[in-house]
Length: 219
Image (cartoon, rainbow, N blue to C red; front, side):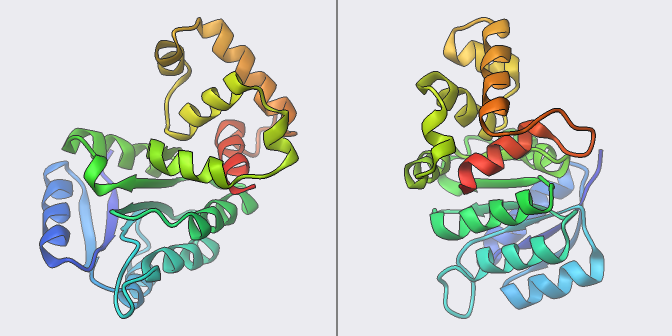
């Protein structure tokens, strides 16, 4: 399904390349901007389905893009956000995930530019995030897990942590089973245990799978 997208990327060549890739994929780039302030204005003006945001943007080239994404997540809880950067900023990434889980929402991703193998992988991740899922680079997951220090984390077994890490990357149960070389039934059991240990009972009002990932990584 075509998406309406805002791009926030300070490098003009990368910004133009992303716009071309997305247009060829059948999507509408409603705005392509180069700084965090312009990103905020573009979201307010166009109300897109998803924003693709770099971490380091003018004027300081530190974490302006990511902090803007956090503010946008709180102001527009239905806005999907895909962070696309060379850098991992664990502190503010945890805040971004926390802003999502606090609203019972999902649709967040964090991909590293130099680790996206091909265009189809990027577009698949974009669609997954826009649909309310997650797409987190394995290296981002590793660093976030290393920063976690909670009782909820300690209650999970090593295998359950592996399953949840793969869930965070956006894998389905069948893909997790193939990756870990275990049965689909075993994956279902691990996922059920994760929900129980993280205190996520069945509900029609939120997506337990996504909230499990967000709670785990933000905690």
